[in-house]
Length: 457
Image (tube, rainbow, N blue to C red):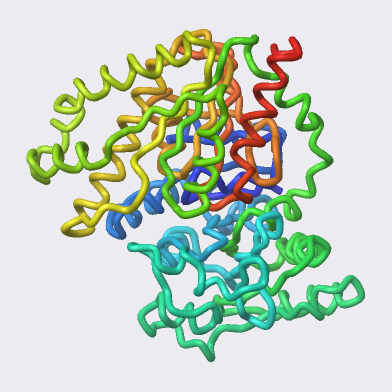
Protein backbone atom coordinates (compact mmCIF):
# COMPACT_ATOMS: atom_id res chain seq x y z
CA UNK A 1 0.00 0.00 0.00
CA UNK A 2 1.28 3.47 -0.89
CA UNK A 3 0.27 6.24 1.51
CA UNK A 4 0.04 9.48 -0.48
CA UNK A 5 0.15 12.57 1.74
CA UNK A 6 -0.95 16.01 0.59
CA UNK A 7 1.02 18.09 3.08
CA UNK A 8 -0.30 21.62 3.59
CA UNK A 9 2.99 22.68 5.21
CA UNK A 10 6.48 21.23 4.65
CA UNK A 11 6.79 20.00 8.23
CA UNK A 12 4.19 17.22 8.12
CA UNK A 13 6.78 14.48 7.71
CA UNK A 14 8.02 15.11 11.24
CA UNK A 15 7.34 11.58 12.52
CA UNK A 16 8.75 9.47 9.66
CA UNK A 17 11.94 8.75 7.72
CA UNK A 18 13.31 7.33 4.48
CA UNK A 19 10.74 8.70 2.06
CA UNK A 20 10.58 11.17 -0.87
CA UNK A 21 9.08 14.65 -0.54
CA UNK A 22 7.90 16.21 -3.81
CA UNK A 23 7.71 19.92 -4.50
CA UNK A 24 6.05 19.40 -7.87
CA UNK A 25 3.58 16.78 -9.04
CA UNK A 26 3.63 16.53 -12.81
CA UNK A 27 2.88 12.97 -14.01
CA UNK A 28 6.51 12.13 -14.79
CA UNK A 29 7.69 13.21 -11.32
CA UNK A 30 4.80 11.35 -9.69
CA UNK A 31 5.50 8.15 -11.59
CA UNK A 32 9.14 8.15 -10.51
CA UNK A 33 8.22 8.82 -6.90
CA UNK A 34 5.56 6.09 -6.81
CA UNK A 35 8.29 3.57 -7.71
CA UNK A 36 10.23 4.47 -4.55
CA UNK A 37 10.25 1.52 -2.12
CA UNK A 38 9.04 3.66 0.78
CA UNK A 39 5.35 3.18 1.65
CA UNK A 40 5.10 6.96 2.08
CA UNK A 41 5.02 9.72 -0.53
CA UNK A 42 4.65 13.36 0.47
CA UNK A 43 3.39 16.05 -1.91
CA UNK A 44 4.30 19.42 -0.41
CA UNK A 45 1.25 21.41 -1.42
CA UNK A 46 1.97 24.34 0.96
CA UNK A 47 -1.71 25.29 0.87
CA UNK A 48 -1.67 26.75 4.36
CA UNK A 49 0.28 29.70 2.94
CA UNK A 50 -2.40 30.32 0.28
CA UNK A 51 -5.75 32.06 0.20
CA UNK A 52 -8.80 29.76 -0.08
CA UNK A 53 -9.30 30.12 -3.84
CA UNK A 54 -5.59 29.47 -4.43
CA UNK A 55 -5.72 26.42 -2.18
CA UNK A 56 -8.67 25.07 -4.18
CA UNK A 57 -6.72 25.48 -7.40
CA UNK A 58 -3.62 23.75 -6.03
CA UNK A 59 -5.45 20.79 -4.47
CA UNK A 60 -7.44 20.34 -7.66
CA UNK A 61 -4.25 20.33 -9.72
CA UNK A 62 -2.63 17.73 -7.46
CA UNK A 63 -5.69 15.48 -7.49
CA UNK A 64 -5.97 15.56 -11.28
CA UNK A 65 -2.29 14.68 -11.64
CA UNK A 66 -2.78 11.81 -9.21
CA UNK A 67 -5.84 10.57 -11.08
CA UNK A 68 -3.87 10.61 -14.34
CA UNK A 69 -1.18 8.42 -12.79
CA UNK A 70 -3.22 6.20 -10.46
CA UNK A 71 -6.22 5.64 -12.71
CA UNK A 72 -9.87 5.74 -11.76
CA UNK A 73 -10.82 4.64 -8.22
CA UNK A 74 -12.40 1.42 -9.49
CA UNK A 75 -9.35 0.43 -11.55
CA UNK A 76 -6.21 -1.51 -10.71
CA UNK A 77 -4.87 1.32 -8.55
CA UNK A 78 -8.02 1.54 -6.47
CA UNK A 79 -8.79 0.46 -2.90
CA UNK A 80 -6.03 -1.46 -1.21
CA UNK A 81 -3.14 -0.08 -3.27
CA UNK A 82 -3.16 3.55 -2.07
CA UNK A 83 -4.51 5.65 0.78
CA UNK A 84 -4.90 9.42 0.58
CA UNK A 85 -4.05 11.54 3.62
CA UNK A 86 -4.62 15.28 3.85
CA UNK A 87 -1.99 16.22 6.43
CA UNK A 88 -3.34 19.00 8.60
CA UNK A 89 -2.01 21.07 11.48
CA UNK A 90 -2.08 19.54 14.96
CA UNK A 91 -3.16 22.93 16.34
CA UNK A 92 -6.15 23.02 13.97
CA UNK A 93 -4.98 25.75 11.59
CA UNK A 94 -5.51 25.42 7.85
CA UNK A 95 -8.11 25.20 5.09
CA UNK A 96 -10.59 22.79 6.64
CA UNK A 97 -12.91 21.43 5.27
CA UNK A 98 -11.98 23.00 1.94
CA UNK A 99 -9.15 20.57 1.16
CA UNK A 100 -10.96 17.35 1.99
CA UNK A 101 -13.97 18.61 0.04
CA UNK A 102 -11.81 19.14 -3.06
CA UNK A 103 -10.19 15.71 -2.69
CA UNK A 104 -13.65 14.14 -2.40
CA UNK A 105 -14.84 16.00 -5.51
CA UNK A 106 -11.83 14.95 -7.60
CA UNK A 107 -10.96 11.49 -6.28
CA UNK A 108 -14.10 10.33 -4.45
CA UNK A 109 -16.45 8.98 -3.52
CA UNK A 110 -15.14 7.91 -0.14
CA UNK A 111 -16.98 5.82 2.43
CA UNK A 112 -15.76 7.93 5.35
CA UNK A 113 -13.27 10.65 6.32
CA UNK A 114 -11.25 10.19 9.51
CA UNK A 115 -10.16 13.33 11.40
CA UNK A 116 -7.06 12.54 13.51
CA UNK A 117 -5.33 15.76 14.70
CA UNK A 118 -3.29 14.11 17.49
CA UNK A 119 0.44 14.79 17.32
CA UNK A 120 1.66 12.92 20.35
CA UNK A 121 5.33 13.90 19.99
CA UNK A 122 4.29 17.54 20.38
CA UNK A 123 1.84 17.07 23.26
CA UNK A 124 -1.31 17.29 21.11
CA UNK A 125 -3.93 14.74 22.19
CA UNK A 126 -7.68 14.28 21.71
CA UNK A 127 -9.87 13.11 24.60
CA UNK A 128 -13.68 12.83 24.51
CA UNK A 129 -13.69 14.82 21.29
CA UNK A 130 -11.74 17.74 22.79
CA UNK A 131 -8.35 18.56 21.27
CA UNK A 132 -5.66 19.39 23.82
CA UNK A 133 -2.21 20.98 23.83
CA UNK A 134 -0.19 19.69 26.77
CA UNK A 135 -3.46 18.86 28.52
CA UNK A 136 -5.16 22.24 27.95
CA UNK A 137 -7.88 22.91 25.36
CA UNK A 138 -6.07 24.13 22.28
CA UNK A 139 -8.47 27.04 21.70
CA UNK A 140 -6.90 28.70 24.76
CA UNK A 141 -3.49 28.76 23.05
CA UNK A 142 -1.97 31.42 20.83
CA UNK A 143 -2.58 29.16 17.80
CA UNK A 144 -6.36 29.64 18.09
CA UNK A 145 -5.85 33.40 17.77
CA UNK A 146 -4.15 32.99 14.37
CA UNK A 147 -5.14 35.93 12.16
CA UNK A 148 -6.13 33.64 9.27
CA UNK A 149 -7.21 30.37 10.87
CA UNK A 150 -8.45 31.24 14.36
CA UNK A 151 -11.26 29.31 16.05
CA UNK A 152 -13.33 29.56 19.27
CA UNK A 153 -13.59 25.94 20.47
CA UNK A 154 -11.50 22.81 21.07
CA UNK A 155 -14.52 20.50 20.92
CA UNK A 156 -13.91 18.91 17.52
CA UNK A 157 -17.55 18.34 16.47
CA UNK A 158 -18.29 21.99 17.31
CA UNK A 159 -15.04 23.02 15.58
CA UNK A 160 -16.15 21.16 12.44
CA UNK A 161 -19.49 23.00 12.48
CA UNK A 162 -17.73 26.34 12.96
CA UNK A 163 -15.14 25.75 10.23
CA UNK A 164 -17.74 24.52 7.75
CA UNK A 165 -19.99 27.51 8.34
CA UNK A 166 -22.73 25.23 9.62
CA UNK A 167 -22.75 22.94 6.59
CA UNK A 168 -21.52 20.05 8.74
CA UNK A 169 -23.46 19.98 12.00
CA UNK A 170 -21.74 18.95 15.21
CA UNK A 171 -24.29 16.19 15.83
CA UNK A 172 -23.46 14.61 12.46
CA UNK A 173 -19.81 14.08 13.45
CA UNK A 174 -19.05 10.58 14.70
CA UNK A 175 -16.28 9.64 17.14
CA UNK A 176 -13.98 6.70 17.73
CA UNK A 177 -13.40 6.58 21.48
CA UNK A 178 -10.23 5.78 23.36
CA UNK A 179 -11.83 2.53 24.56
CA UNK A 180 -12.37 1.41 20.95
CA UNK A 181 -8.63 1.85 20.31
CA UNK A 182 -7.52 -0.71 22.87
CA UNK A 183 -5.99 -3.89 21.36
CA UNK A 184 -8.81 -6.13 22.57
CA UNK A 185 -11.31 -4.04 20.59
CA UNK A 186 -9.44 -4.13 17.29
CA UNK A 187 -11.81 -6.55 15.52
CA UNK A 188 -14.83 -4.52 16.62
CA UNK A 189 -13.13 -1.42 15.23
CA UNK A 190 -12.56 -3.18 11.90
CA UNK A 191 -16.26 -4.07 11.78
CA UNK A 192 -17.24 -0.49 12.59
CA UNK A 193 -15.06 0.86 9.77
CA UNK A 194 -16.52 -1.69 7.37
CA UNK A 195 -20.02 -0.45 8.22
CA UNK A 196 -19.25 3.19 7.34
CA UNK A 197 -20.84 4.63 4.21
CA UNK A 198 -21.92 7.99 2.80
CA UNK A 199 -18.66 9.69 3.85
CA UNK A 200 -19.40 10.75 7.44
CA UNK A 201 -16.69 12.69 9.28
CA UNK A 202 -15.30 10.58 12.12
CA UNK A 203 -13.20 12.18 14.89
CA UNK A 204 -10.55 9.85 16.32
CA UNK A 205 -9.51 10.32 19.94
CA UNK A 206 -5.88 9.46 20.82
CA UNK A 207 -3.53 9.78 23.77
CA UNK A 208 -0.91 7.07 23.16
CA UNK A 209 0.99 5.73 20.14
CA UNK A 210 -0.47 2.27 20.74
CA UNK A 211 -3.96 3.64 20.08
CA UNK A 212 -2.92 5.03 16.71
CA UNK A 213 -1.30 1.70 15.89
CA UNK A 214 -4.62 -0.08 16.54
CA UNK A 215 -6.37 2.43 14.25
CA UNK A 216 -3.72 1.98 11.55
CA UNK A 217 -4.06 -1.80 11.57
CA UNK A 218 -7.83 -1.49 11.32
CA UNK A 219 -7.55 0.95 8.41
CA UNK A 220 -5.19 -1.36 6.54
CA UNK A 221 -7.54 -4.28 7.19
CA UNK A 222 -10.58 -2.58 5.62
CA UNK A 223 -8.93 -0.85 2.66
CA UNK A 224 -9.64 -3.63 0.17
CA UNK A 225 -13.34 -3.18 0.92
CA UNK A 226 -13.69 0.46 1.95
CA UNK A 227 -12.37 3.73 0.50
CA UNK A 228 -11.24 6.00 3.31
CA UNK A 229 -9.92 9.56 3.26
CA UNK A 230 -7.83 10.67 6.23
CA UNK A 231 -7.13 14.16 7.55
CA UNK A 232 -4.47 13.83 10.21
CA UNK A 233 -1.47 15.35 11.91
CA UNK A 234 1.90 13.66 11.63
CA UNK A 235 1.69 10.94 14.31
CA UNK A 236 -0.76 8.68 12.48
CA UNK A 237 1.51 8.50 9.43
CA UNK A 238 4.19 6.57 11.31
CA UNK A 239 1.59 4.01 12.41
CA UNK A 240 -0.01 3.72 8.97
CA UNK A 241 3.31 3.11 7.25
CA UNK A 242 4.50 0.65 9.94
CA UNK A 243 8.04 1.88 9.38
CA UNK A 244 11.00 0.06 10.93
CA UNK A 245 13.11 1.99 13.46
CA UNK A 246 14.99 4.96 12.04
CA UNK A 247 18.30 3.55 10.72
CA UNK A 248 20.41 6.56 11.68
CA UNK A 249 20.29 7.78 15.31
CA UNK A 250 20.45 11.56 15.90
CA UNK A 251 24.23 11.62 16.36
CA UNK A 252 24.72 9.88 13.01
CA UNK A 253 22.27 12.25 11.31
CA UNK A 254 24.22 15.23 12.65
CA UNK A 255 27.42 13.75 11.19
CA UNK A 256 25.89 14.10 7.72
CA UNK A 257 26.98 17.75 7.89
CA UNK A 258 29.48 18.70 5.18
CA UNK A 259 32.76 19.29 6.97
CA UNK A 260 33.67 21.56 9.86
CA UNK A 261 32.67 24.96 8.39
CA UNK A 262 29.74 26.81 10.01
CA UNK A 263 26.15 26.18 9.05
CA UNK A 264 23.33 28.74 9.04
CA UNK A 265 19.88 29.19 10.60
CA UNK A 266 16.74 30.82 9.16
CA UNK A 267 13.84 31.77 11.45
CA UNK A 268 10.74 33.04 9.68
CA UNK A 269 8.11 31.81 12.15
CA UNK A 270 7.09 34.41 14.74
CA UNK A 271 4.73 32.46 17.02
CA UNK A 272 5.58 32.94 20.73
CA UNK A 273 7.47 29.63 20.99
CA UNK A 274 9.65 30.55 18.00
CA UNK A 275 10.46 33.87 19.65
CA UNK A 276 11.58 32.10 22.83
CA UNK A 277 13.69 29.62 20.89
CA UNK A 278 15.31 32.37 18.82
CA UNK A 279 16.12 34.42 21.91
CA UNK A 280 17.96 31.49 23.51
CA UNK A 281 19.90 30.78 20.32
CA UNK A 282 21.01 34.39 19.87
CA UNK A 283 22.70 34.52 23.29
CA UNK A 284 25.16 31.84 22.11
CA UNK A 285 28.55 33.53 21.44
CA UNK A 286 29.07 31.26 18.42
CA UNK A 287 25.91 32.63 16.75
CA UNK A 288 25.52 35.98 15.00
CA UNK A 289 22.02 37.37 14.56
CA UNK A 290 21.07 39.19 11.34
CA UNK A 291 17.62 40.81 11.43
CA UNK A 292 15.48 41.07 8.32
CA UNK A 293 13.45 44.29 8.86
CA UNK A 294 9.82 43.39 8.24
CA UNK A 295 8.63 47.00 8.37
CA UNK A 296 10.95 47.91 5.48
CA UNK A 297 9.59 45.04 3.41
CA UNK A 298 5.99 45.99 4.22
CA UNK A 299 6.60 49.60 3.17
CA UNK A 300 8.06 48.38 -0.10
CA UNK A 301 5.11 46.18 -1.05
CA UNK A 302 2.67 48.94 -0.05
CA UNK A 303 4.52 51.43 -2.22
CA UNK A 304 4.43 49.05 -5.18
CA UNK A 305 0.79 48.10 -4.67
CA UNK A 306 -0.97 44.75 -5.16
CA UNK A 307 -0.63 44.80 -8.95
CA UNK A 308 3.17 45.13 -8.84
CA UNK A 309 4.07 42.12 -6.73
CA UNK A 310 6.61 40.92 -9.29
CA UNK A 311 8.61 44.12 -8.80
CA UNK A 312 9.13 43.51 -5.08
CA UNK A 313 12.17 41.28 -5.56
CA UNK A 314 13.86 43.91 -7.67
CA UNK A 315 12.98 46.71 -5.25
CA UNK A 316 14.34 44.70 -2.32
CA UNK A 317 17.63 43.84 -4.02
CA UNK A 318 19.63 46.49 -2.09
CA UNK A 319 18.32 45.03 1.16
CA UNK A 320 19.24 41.51 0.00
CA UNK A 321 22.80 42.61 -0.81
CA UNK A 322 23.12 44.36 2.55
CA UNK A 323 21.90 41.34 4.51
CA UNK A 324 23.94 38.89 2.45
CA UNK A 325 27.12 40.82 3.22
CA UNK A 326 26.35 40.64 6.95
CA UNK A 327 25.56 36.92 6.76
CA UNK A 328 28.75 36.24 4.83
CA UNK A 329 30.88 38.23 7.27
CA UNK A 330 29.47 36.28 10.22
CA UNK A 331 30.08 32.97 8.45
CA UNK A 332 33.65 33.85 7.49
CA UNK A 333 34.36 34.78 11.13
CA UNK A 334 33.53 31.18 12.09
CA UNK A 335 30.17 31.92 13.69
CA UNK A 336 26.73 30.58 12.71
CA UNK A 337 24.71 33.33 10.99
CA UNK A 338 21.10 33.39 12.22
CA UNK A 339 18.80 35.22 9.83
CA UNK A 340 15.48 36.13 11.45
CA UNK A 341 12.55 38.33 10.54
CA UNK A 342 11.62 41.13 12.94
CA UNK A 343 9.52 39.71 15.73
CA UNK A 344 5.79 40.37 16.10
CA UNK A 345 2.87 40.22 13.69
CA UNK A 346 2.41 43.33 11.56
CA UNK A 347 -1.02 44.87 11.07
CA UNK A 348 -1.93 44.44 7.42
CA UNK A 349 -4.71 46.21 5.59
CA UNK A 350 -6.32 43.02 4.31
CA UNK A 351 -5.75 39.31 3.75
CA UNK A 352 -4.13 39.92 0.37
CA UNK A 353 -1.52 42.25 1.82
CA UNK A 354 -0.83 39.79 4.65
CA UNK A 355 -0.21 37.02 2.14
CA UNK A 356 2.04 39.23 -0.03
CA UNK A 357 4.07 40.17 3.03
CA UNK A 358 4.45 36.53 4.12
CA UNK A 359 5.47 35.30 0.69
CA UNK A 360 7.80 38.26 0.05
CA UNK A 361 9.59 37.69 3.34
CA UNK A 362 9.92 33.96 2.68
CA UNK A 363 11.17 34.63 -0.85
CA UNK A 364 13.78 37.08 0.37
CA UNK A 365 14.98 34.60 3.00
CA UNK A 366 15.18 31.87 0.35
CA UNK A 367 17.30 34.05 -1.96
CA UNK A 368 19.58 34.95 0.93
CA UNK A 369 20.05 31.27 1.78
CA UNK A 370 20.89 30.49 -1.86
CA UNK A 371 23.61 33.16 -1.70
CA UNK A 372 25.40 31.64 1.29
CA UNK A 373 28.93 30.23 0.75
CA UNK A 374 28.95 26.93 -1.18
CA UNK A 375 30.99 25.33 1.64
CA UNK A 376 28.03 25.72 4.03
CA UNK A 377 27.94 22.62 6.25
CA UNK A 378 24.22 22.53 7.15
CA UNK A 379 21.09 24.68 7.18
CA UNK A 380 18.24 24.93 9.70
CA UNK A 381 14.95 26.46 8.52
CA UNK A 382 12.24 27.30 11.06
CA UNK A 383 8.68 27.97 9.90
CA UNK A 384 6.46 26.26 7.34
CA UNK A 385 6.26 28.95 4.66
CA UNK A 386 9.96 29.75 5.13
CA UNK A 387 10.93 26.11 4.61
CA UNK A 388 8.64 25.51 1.63
CA UNK A 389 9.84 28.62 -0.19
CA UNK A 390 13.45 27.75 0.56
CA UNK A 391 13.09 24.25 -0.88
CA UNK A 392 11.02 25.15 -3.92
CA UNK A 393 12.36 28.57 -4.92
CA UNK A 394 15.65 29.25 -3.17
CA UNK A 395 17.09 25.78 -3.79
CA UNK A 396 15.01 24.99 -6.92
CA UNK A 397 14.23 21.44 -5.82
CA UNK A 398 11.70 19.11 -7.45
CA UNK A 399 12.14 16.47 -4.74
CA UNK A 400 14.18 15.83 -1.63
CA UNK A 401 14.68 12.80 0.60
CA UNK A 402 13.86 12.69 4.29
CA UNK A 403 16.64 10.96 6.22
CA UNK A 404 15.03 10.99 9.67
CA UNK A 405 14.38 12.99 12.84
CA UNK A 406 17.26 14.76 14.58
CA UNK A 407 14.97 15.44 17.55
CA UNK A 408 11.32 14.39 17.96
CA UNK A 409 9.43 16.11 15.16
CA UNK A 410 12.53 17.77 13.67
CA UNK A 411 13.16 16.40 10.17
CA UNK A 412 16.58 16.22 8.53
CA UNK A 413 16.46 16.28 4.73
CA UNK A 414 19.41 15.91 2.40
CA UNK A 415 19.77 17.66 -0.94
CA UNK A 416 20.59 15.56 -4.02
CA UNK A 417 24.23 14.79 -4.84
CA UNK A 418 23.90 16.70 -8.12
CA UNK A 419 22.46 19.90 -6.62
CA UNK A 420 23.94 23.00 -8.27
CA UNK A 421 24.55 24.98 -5.08
CA UNK A 422 24.85 22.63 -2.10
CA UNK A 423 25.30 18.95 -3.05
CA UNK A 424 24.14 16.62 -0.23
CA UNK A 425 23.61 19.52 2.17
CA UNK A 426 21.74 18.45 5.33
CA UNK A 427 18.72 20.70 5.88
CA UNK A 428 16.59 20.66 9.01
CA UNK A 429 12.98 21.84 8.71
CA UNK A 430 11.45 22.87 12.01
CA UNK A 431 7.79 23.86 12.57
CA UNK A 432 7.17 27.11 14.34
CA UNK A 433 5.19 25.43 17.11
CA UNK A 434 7.53 22.49 17.78
CA UNK A 435 9.28 21.67 21.02
CA UNK A 436 10.16 23.77 24.03
CA UNK A 437 12.24 26.91 24.49
CA UNK A 438 15.53 24.95 24.25
CA UNK A 439 14.72 22.93 21.13
CA UNK A 440 16.20 25.19 18.45
CA UNK A 441 19.41 25.71 20.42
CA UNK A 442 19.62 21.97 21.07
CA UNK A 443 19.27 21.20 17.34
CA UNK A 444 21.92 23.78 16.49
CA UNK A 445 24.27 22.36 19.12
CA UNK A 446 23.84 18.79 17.83
CA UNK A 447 24.86 19.93 14.35
CA UNK A 448 27.70 22.08 15.68
CA UNK A 449 29.17 19.45 17.99
CA UNK A 450 29.26 16.93 15.12
CA UNK A 451 31.63 19.32 13.33
CA UNK A 452 33.72 20.22 16.34
CA UNK A 453 34.60 16.61 17.10
CA UNK A 454 35.82 16.21 13.54
CA UNK A 455 33.13 13.72 12.57
CA UNK A 456 31.29 15.88 10.03
CA UNK A 457 30.99 14.46 6.53
